[in-house]
Length: 268
Ligand SMILES: NC(=O)c1ccc[n+]([C@@H]2O[C@H](COP(=O)([O-])OP(=O)(O)OC[C@H]3O[C@@H](n4cnc5c(N)ncnc54)[C@H](O)[C@@H]3O)[C@@H](O)[C@H]2O)c1
Image (cartoon, rainbow, N blue to C red; front, side):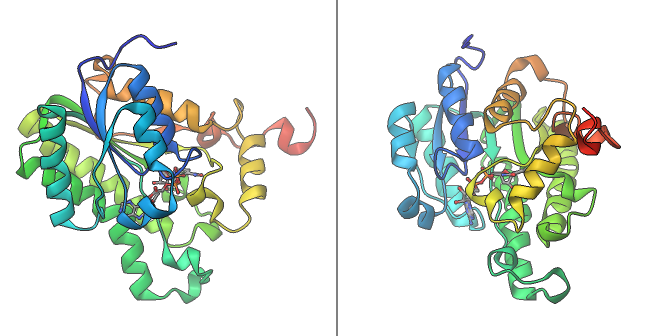
């Protein structure tokens, strides 16, 4: 169902690791909708993931960048404008990582060096990306910048651990930078709060299978898939949503507005 709604648009997509990654699905949909873009990921993910397969499929170049490094980001943004032949119309930040979650540290026993790494990779990197694109004047007027988040920013999901703080900060950065980028350049900045989704990052959270099943039962439409999320991202990159900015957009099948469901009570 491609309609060329991103025809002529240029972008950068962060975070495609393998075919389960949300960013992978966004890249496939963006290419189908006529966009051209560069793909990027942390240098270590280049070795572990399958990004080369995606690049070949989407006819995209890969520029490795650790999203916490300003030097890498400058190289990425300059390189992308160079390779794509102009300024950018969209950026997807699809990045998350907590060493505390990875190493199964309990929330009440966090390692604070790890905590700072969680914040740097999962939240501050979003600010760094935008500060870099702004400094290099890399975004076109009315372009669209998106990051992916999770409802643990608003409600407690105990095993999400310090990623909850990172997501709260990420959403706040979208609002704050959205103000400055909107007034300076009509660039819009939003976060999409996605249902739990089976990916490498998602499955790293303890008890993920119970978690995804619970969310599915608690959502009138069921969980949104990675493909659904990609469709939403494409609409947010398109000109059809040009007055939407500084929002945290719930993309969760209704989960965030639901108190209880018949399915949850076993009465459906
Ligand atoms: N999977 C879920 O249940 C779910 C739900 C809501 C939101 N999200 C969010 O969606 C986004 C994408 O995650 P995903 O579920 O597709 O998992 P994923 O594991 O496929 O993607 C996470 C990506 O972050 C990248 N990354 C980690 N450290 C980096 C660094 N320093 N520099 C650059 N890239 C780095 C990884 O290499 C990986 O590609 C994340 O922000 C995640 O928190 C996921």
